[in-house]
Image (cartoon, rainbow, N blue to C red; front, side, top):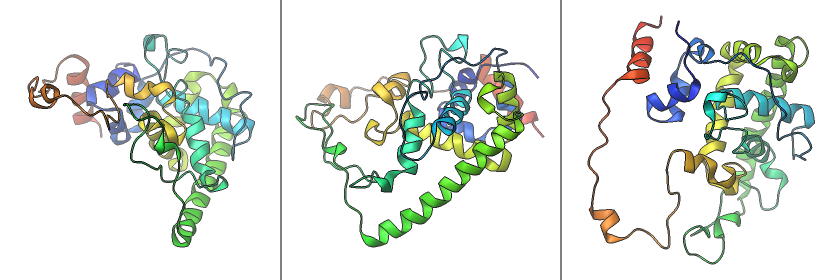
Amino acid sequence: MAVFHRRQVLQAAGFAGLAVLFPPELLAACSTASSPTADGAKGQSFLVLDAHEARVVEEATSRLIPGPDDDPSEAGHPGAREANVTRYIDTMLGALELSPPRIFAGGPFSNRSGWPVDDMAKFLALTPAQVSGWTLRLAGFRARYRAGIKTLDRMAGGDFIAASREKMDEILAQDPGGFMTLLFTHAIEGMYSAPEYGGNAGLAGWHEISWPGDRQPRGYSEDAVSLSDGPDAYVPKGIGAQLLQLLRTSP
């Protein structure tokens, strides 16, 4: 099988979130043979994850959405590490530890488009029923992270973060216990969600896909709304055509 870089594969599909549909062996083929670099999770404090768990999550999500420190071909393109996806995941897991819980951002506006304050940073209180439901849901996520991280360490011979990037990719491609799928889902959320939830640091994810983000109350000009640059037609070619061929021929 030919070797492609992850970002080429994801961009060929049109949007990174579609990667959850790809077979694990296809993601495994998108690898580089190099060693891990120092990570941003080291030295940070977290709500739920301990220092080692946070570093495992950061290294794993940075293999799924690599940035310039994870793959030389990603120069100029932020990944999970740059967007602080680990912070998003830890904030989600510990959302009920905060008051008010970090579940539903407020509104109506952030301060990104002309509003004087960031109303979205003021999270909403939960009803007792919502607290009960989220307690169960987050307890399930926490258990899966604890077990998943231990499994990644075991498969790496004791310490996932000490493994080579090729070995990390090999392990993640096996999707042990569905943990890679869970990690990828949460990494996508942390990469592209509103930064009030802990990820998308510096709007890195939005800038990477040229999305302007929330535009209210300033909104858009009449010309921006009425003048279209035409449909975004997709004609398979290059890596996109190769990707479609791989998907057609995958067992």
